[in-house]
Amino acid sequence: MPVEMIVRLVLLLATLSLTGCTSFGPNPSAEFTTLSPAWPRWFTLDWTPRPEPGGTSTVSGYVQNALGEEAIEVQLLTQALDKSGAVVGQRITWAGNVPGFARTYFEVRNLPAAETYRVSVWAFSLHQSLG
Image (cartoon, rainbow, N blue to C red):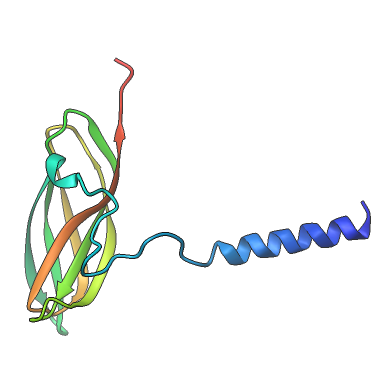
């Protein structure tokens, strides 16, 4: 293999590895809370915050799937908000798979103490059966 080809290959691999370390795509914010704006048609969320020792909070509850199809790779965005509605902390977590017409428990720990919390479905996929 010629040296020039090896150099190009090394540069390509270095570029790909560095690119993998950066974040692509939208990041959540106070205004941007989901990659799937239609999620409220198919899911409901029931959750409660609970203060924890050390000044943190845990938000736990259930995500309910109103579709007959299994939702897979469900991700939730949990945000801690101050009195003005500004985001003071947030976390995207996996809720896992949610069977059709069923619910799945979730728990998000180590959130900053806040005035209020907001939970939304950040992203999901549908598992469509062949039958």
